[in-house]
Length: 320
Image (spheres, rainbow, N blue to C red):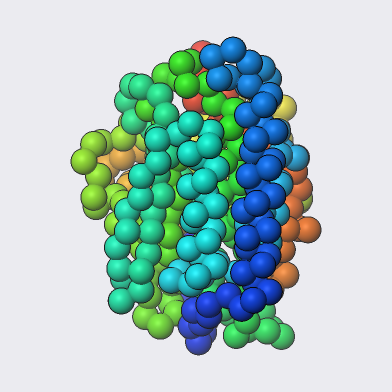
């Protein structure tokens, strides 16, 4: 993502394949994630549903740790593909219908992932799963890749935990969990931002009721302001739910204008919101690691989305 009017600092693009250590870490994360997943499935009651349908921040945090154990996950890298396989495996084991969009940009193979569940008007919740190839805002290591604990792993972690707790037969929508590739390579080697989400928006065969993007939502010092390019009514509804839940980290004031994965959909006239904490000091640096995350921050965002998807928003809303 990029703050509007901020051109950033170009950096030398790196798409390194994982070495032996990285591959071991990646495979360990996938195996550990699988064991963790079966524990979640064992907790399901009759009908395949979880007995306790409440988003859990600690479980979401484990999904973030799993991703970071794979290492940096830039577009076109072996580690990025492993991360995608990890996401697909989690969704399939949880009973979601999974599809992919495989395409190329500038000769680089990319892959969007979509999990689908429920019936009704299509509702898309999205997050990017790639990480920036270089830490171009890091004064000491500007050519190193980032791990993306917050900028990459946190949004995916929220979506995967939602995948585990949403009850199929109680959903009011056909929910799509969309995992975008190649969001975060803007201004590197001439690449734009939001390549994966742009491809998905252009290829839509249905018109979603709305799109909600979660990005950089895990900062332990969480501050979630309105984003200026987001749909006014939809963001108002989400922040109203947060207020009802007592989450004053959702601040109903515009602070930033962000070029992020919601914009390709908004430009097609689809109501779209970006839930993002852009006041994150480790953005695009090598210090963007999972120890900067707070499980309670992930939980707040997940609970708001869970309440929204289960129809809490139908009870009313607050004015701007």
